[in-house]
Amino acid sequence: MPRVFAVIGLGTFGSAVALALAKRGYEVFACDKDAGKIEEVGHDLADAVELDATDEKALRDAGFSEIDTALISFGDSIADSLLVTMLLKEIGVREVVVKVSDERHAKLVKRIGADRVIFPERDMANRLVENLLSPRIFDFIELSQEYSLMEIAAPKKIIGKKLIDLNLRKKYGVNIIAIKSNVPVVNKKGMPDIEQKVNISPGGDDEIGEGDRLVVLGRDQDIEKIKKL
Image (cartoon, rainbow, N blue to C red):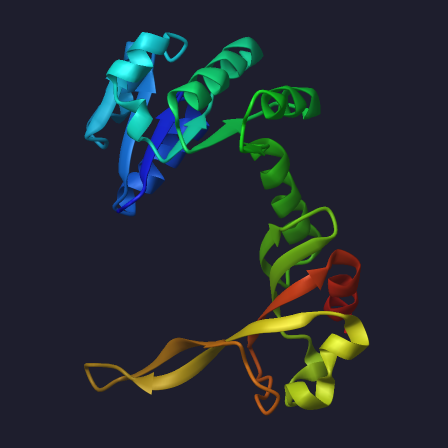
């Protein structure tokens, strides 16, 4: 069965998440007690309704017991997010994700049943800082306080070498989990073109080429060593 999502609170972040899920083909139930916000997204979302999520009966009547994952995306109303978290868990929502403003907020919602918390501003700030400090980084995902998954431009010192010879796992403690390469091709019109090829789980005999991007997994401090090669 396809997952069914609910987004409660259609501010900038909530609306963006709801629209992104809908564009990927997921069933999304979006709600907000502000009718104006419903109007803003109504033409893009089939299920966007005016609803007060602090009202347990309204949640049950709307069918929240059938929701797989619900995102609570209120502004600064910590009290409301706590109440709605509690109600959703009581109703039987399988996974409740809460947008939080600070560590105190996160601790409180976790105590009453939130399955996950997210810090949109902090997470985006971390990604921006990584890109500003190192223009060779194309993407960055923080997996924990110590580990990250990062896509970087292949350092010049390792271009032309095979993974088995580099032995990055032993020397630096990082794993190359994918290599993205630009490969010359002939397109449908018979013209020369460039196509991106992704090598998932590359082997020891795979060679790093000029312009390649490496998707690396490891501790932040070890990835920093690779970036400086």
